[in-house]
Length: 64
Image 1 (cartoon, rainbow, N blue to C red):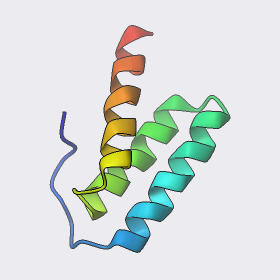
Image 2: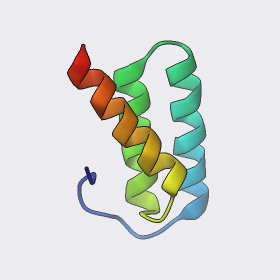
Image 3: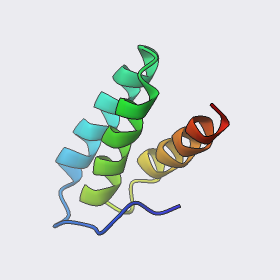
Image 4: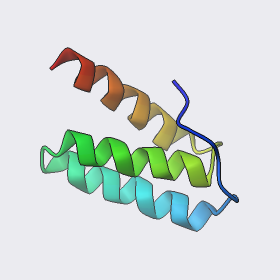
């Protein structure tokens, strides 16, 4: 899956949203983590870690 439209690339914001997603995920906040990772991919669509985390979260959310 690919999140919605990409905004102007900002790798720093992408990394920050990715880290926020990891923190939220570790707290069991899957929906919030997924939203953070979606933002990370919007800011840098080449951020493979964020894209993979987002895709994994989408699968987990569908399984619930």
